[in-house]
Image (tube, rainbow, N blue to C red; front, side, top):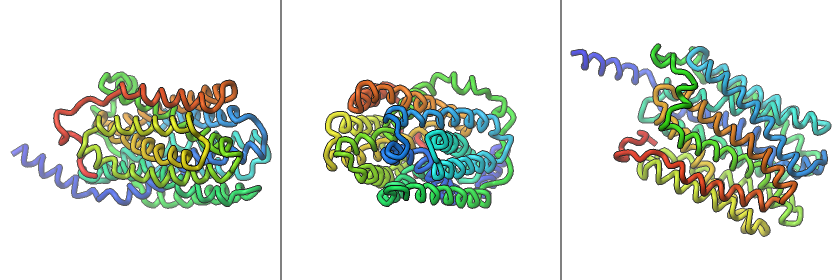
Length: 405
């Protein structure tokens, strides 16, 4: 009788939940703003910023590390707030940071204001991504959760798709209008999230609320996930920071190559929406290996043959597939490792991504200034291949993977 009562309670709880679309789409829009433009748009416009403000490629690329440090602070606050505050609060703060930061970039008279804008907008991902794990857990029926997480994580690629064509028209001072428009979109998405997200904190059972960050980070079964996350952050930050200037330089300073690169990355990256389905049918390990190999091929092209539109766009297509599937895979993988603490667990994962991202532009920026762009991409290629050692644990069968798609 107790079992029947528990089953009835579980069914009633699930009946109060909905499908994946509302949180999935609001999260997709949020990440499109915070990542697709607020974070990765800087690398797309790096040749333009260099022409406008001066400075070396490595130094300007390393500016992105400032934003990643701010993201680490945001992650710590978000992790502490989980279960205590509505997820609407950190998501709102993050979108506010994205809007204000992009506004500063748009009006920047010099490198200091530009750096401040990059730092403020760079904090946004730390505020917005992980709270959606709780939103999905609380508001979406179990069979739709993986699909919702895949939609949210793929928001980056849709932002990139829009940023690429916008940059085609951002010649001379018109690049400022693009950033003003992006800031306006950030505030519109903020208003949408205020209406769409739950106003109450996501409740957790008392035994789970006492779990400490040290315990989450110290779980041995999570360390392959943390290694993969750190590698993803480092390689991703290096590519987003330096790929645009690499293909522009290799093609005679042609400023239209980088926007084309971003557009192809975004279009190819839409495959990330299907990551949940891929994992369900082929297993976490197989998709992880495939994503890492494709990612390593994308950086190898910029290492060995960045000249020519064909090679540049091939690299972009490979990167879009490898990075977006790999990034979405981390959120699905985290949901399996930390099913009872989704936001706190994923906050730890994103912290490792961010640590890699802090190191990537700073260290590889020095490599660029002293040894050149090809050497930096050679290091990124070797690191992507080495990350294959961080394989997820093998499940007894594929049915143990995430449900839904």
